[in-house]
Amino acid sequence: MISRVPETPVKLSAAAGELITKLIGVNGLTEAETRNVLAIVRSAYAPLTRFRATEAETPAMLAMLEGLEDGAEQQGLKNEIAETIMFVRHQ
Image 1 (cartoon, rainbow, N blue to C red):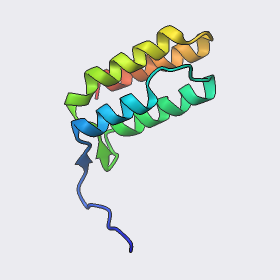
Image 2: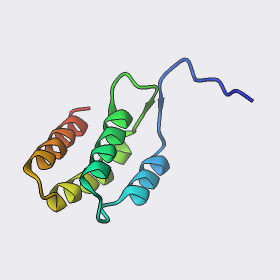
Image 3: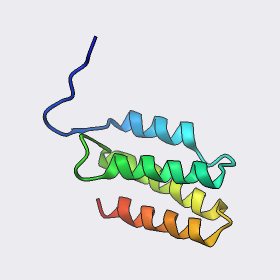
């Protein structure tokens, strides 16, 4: 069975954002895993995506990102996380 993609953008529910945060968390992620998390977050908050996060998810997502930033060791990764935090705040 093929499901149809909605014609209009759909926001993720707050429950979906909480689930993403619980599944990903900040539990000892490698640099590559952290970059994957950043890609997921950017996709969820991107203005042109069909599936966009709701405002209710933003505080939890920012808290997760800030935790990732605190745990990152490489400056380049810290910079990418900081850019993603700014991206989410301005969406």
